[in-house]
Image 1 (cartoon, one colour):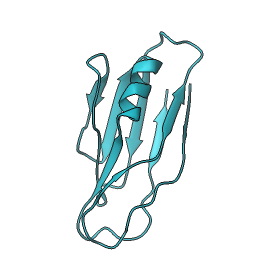
Image 2 (cartoon, rainbow, N blue to C red; image 1 turned 90 degrees about the horizontal axis):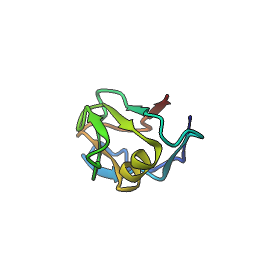
Image 3 (cartoon, rainbow, N blue to C red; image 1 turned 180 degrees about the horizontal axis):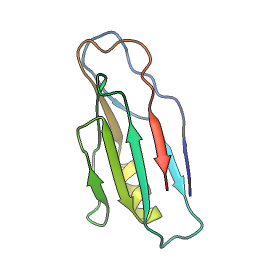
Image 4 (cartoon, rainbow, N blue to C red; image 1 turned 60 degrees about the vertical axis):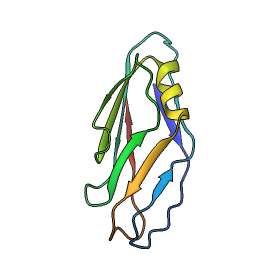
Length: 103
């Protein structure tokens, strides 16, 4: 399995804001395998969520700093395409690192 993403920009001004992250793409040559994508940000920075999660995808940690999505590759991509959102908290400034772990 493989995951790719590009940088996204948020104001980083210390004012709470919601940013839809740029395209996150997941691939796996085994289309039927169950895959897990875990997305993590520092707990002080805010929270993560997907706008829409198909019923076939398990979503754990919605609106927390660690979001895990599990399902087959096409359903995971559908969830990611709906909009992966980062909501920053008041006081979060500067760059925020996002870690993607896919297996």
